[in-house]
Image 1 (tube, rainbow, N blue to C red):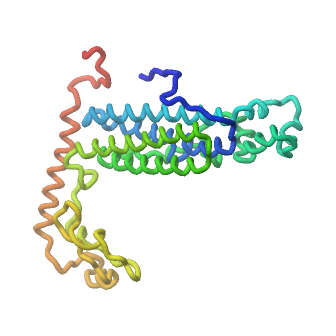
Image 2: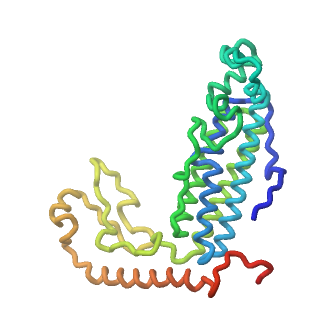
Image 3: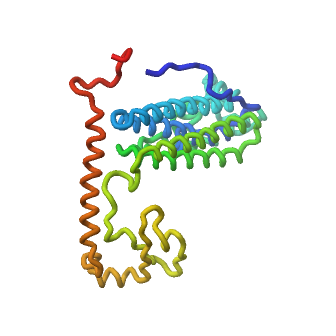
Length: 311
């Protein structure tokens, strides 16, 4: 159940109209790294977390709700940046009005001219309204959402989402000198950092959480780091210990030769029988634990999502 409070979480303000920046800001309204995408991602992820991880369900719903409030801040800012523009776009008394605007005959008309050309959909489709589209007028798409049904996977996706959103806000700051907008963008950018640390802490609280999902890595193929291009640089990503796994990388200098010698990894020189058996045992154990985690949390009898007054 949602309850809307009309006061914004952050007091968004603008110094003056700026249709061009309003168009750029649409990226954080209906773009792939925007607030709507974040809100819907965490909102949908929360459903799968409700039974096995009710505490993470609460966190995801809280952050999703905050993202909706950020969406409102972005939308409100866009509208304020179009002050004086929407009214002219909605003036249908004279069919030549828009043509006069596009000719840019006066200073007042020039700002409307900017709005029309920055994103023609402002004038043609939305009439100056804020809709879930990005700065190119492309409609918001559900494919922006990453929700995979495994909380450790989802939380890692969220770390990446918050990182990308922060970067977009940093880029947006370069395109406006309005101090009020900078304050708003700084607030929104900083909340991305806070959410990142919340998701990071939530992931750390789930143990074990590596590798992602359920099945363990196959020991026959885990350690190989392949030389896939001339002059491959060596570093901690292809030599030394694989962090946290107690195994070292095996650098394969000639991947083509190795593929031929092993008949495509089917006839390996080393016997991994013991390791594979251990892996299979771990898979069965982890599968049982993950399954029991959900089953044991499910109530007996009629399924009920909410417990009103603790009943």
